[in-house]
Image (cartoon, rainbow, N blue to C red):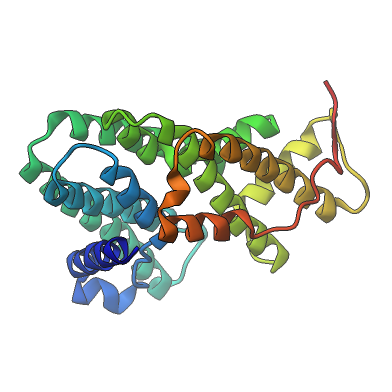
Length: 271
């Protein structure tokens, strides 16, 4: 576990060094490095046959992509005053800046296949983000597929590139649960949740979904139904390969899986 903790701290420090920009950080929030995703990515890259130094560069690159995608997601569309407009413009600029950083690293690695894989992953993430934010999905399964693809496309592409495809379903379901847990927490706190807004929109427009007058509870039940289903899929995957042998990753996984209490199966979906 110590070795993985050292790698995690080292890569995180290198990412922090790269995203530091005095002017940008003076006007926008410091980008958040998702340690769960970083640890999952490090573990995934360790399963491949690429040298450790290159693996770290890949890891830094992919996390910079994630930060760039997350930063662009912070851009609001509502009418702003002059100061807020400046912040929005700088947030867009920050996303572009972080994108430039990962392109620079990729150019130095000179790995066309990895570049192609990551480009495909970025394309998929953006396509499904558009679908989510425009509330294009007209079924719950379609909506949840958008969420899963947003969270996991980069990881699935890396797993495919490294030919460790057993990690694809595991990673996509784990990151899907992590995102739904976060959206669930925002909803419970009365904060805006794009996923719960989309769920509400679907059940309002689709007669086949029956909900009670206590709609908030039903929305939570729908969310928990998908969380529980993904948990079952993860349990099947962990039987196929010894992912939990890594103590640090195992603790992170258990923390993600154990976050919510289930209301599953308390809503009805016909046919």
